[in-house]
Image (cartoon, rainbow, N blue to C red):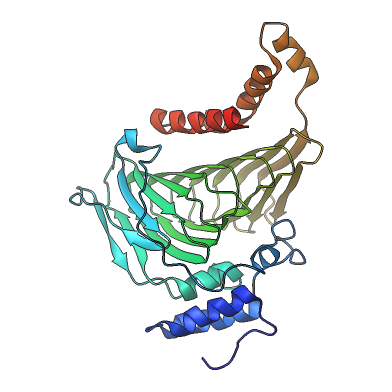
Amino acid sequence: MAGSLFINPTAFEAGLQAAFTARSTTSEGQAAAFERFAHLRFPNRRVEGWKWSDFNAALRARALANDEADDIAIAPSAFAALAPLEFRVVDGKIELPAEEMPDGLRYGIMDPVATIPELETHPIATLNVAMTRKALAIEVKEGASFARPILIRHINTGAGFGFAQTMLRISAKAKASVIETYEGVGAGLYSHLLHMVVRDGADFTRTVVQETGPETIINAIAAVKMEEAARFAQTGLSTGGKLSRHETHLHFWAPDSSATINSAALVSGVRHSDFTSEVLHIAPACKARQLHKGVARDKARNVFQGKFHVKRKAQKTDARMTANALLLSDTAEANHKPELQIYADDVECAHGSTSGALDADALFYLRQRGLDENQARALLIEAFVGEVIDNVEDDGIRGVLAARVSNWLAAS
């Protein structure tokens, strides 16, 4: 790869190309992906869908090359009490569990995907395809009900960049729960691409928790393919970073499937949290529910973008989306963009969005019953976010999420 593929590259882009060129082995698919990225480049605020999450500006002056992190002591996960099967991805390097592979599950390390067709024009997904060295592959076998949660810990320590992929297959009539955590105080870019299939009659739950340092820049993408009579339930909780964006691209390929995509953002200081989703209804008689709750204080920014796209053949679609924001200061921001794009005529679809401050009457009511102002405000915020947390079916996971909310309120 002679010369620069970029026109007037930023320092970060030049560093990426130098790192890519220095690799000993790259596939033709990865080389083609890097060339596509060099054409697309990092998205900026002039690109629709990224106007509130400007990765180009955030990365313009970042480090030139990836850091080789020293061995670090990794504290136990907040979910450790649930006895999960724990995988770690430290700065893009995969660590498999030390225990024997349990019944009902297969996993290992494989070559990364060469492309994901629906994401070929996504700039950061394209870069991920080019830069990821190895991928974590997990399969829940047909008919298996894997009771223990599967925990994937993404730990970012460096100031350069890290790329990772996970391939996840939930086989027919299987049931499993995956928890993904994003941790660490690294100040660089971390990109994760999750490509998964929920097969016929499978039941899958995904929980995403991001608690990273204030300088972390994250783009995490989940591309989910739903087959017939499958069920998918996702809950995300993020305290943001310098720039944090969690994306869900969910496609209903077969009828009678359902998905719930809920999220909550708790951001303070100058942190930024973005939950973006696209739900594509290709098959008929599928159901989608989406709820987002964002809390922002100081100069923080909460972004929500959700889109339901209903194809002409997707009759009997039932899809509803709600986004609510709570602003705790005059300088905090909430940017919401709920969308419906409907080409079928026999559907029930709706969306709504609100933003506002804490209710003064409710604060007064609680103060009159013996709570001080901080306690009253915390109680109202917990109740506001609680609608997302309370929808989590697993008692253990719900308890951990509620504790993370309480910890954020105590620290704020």
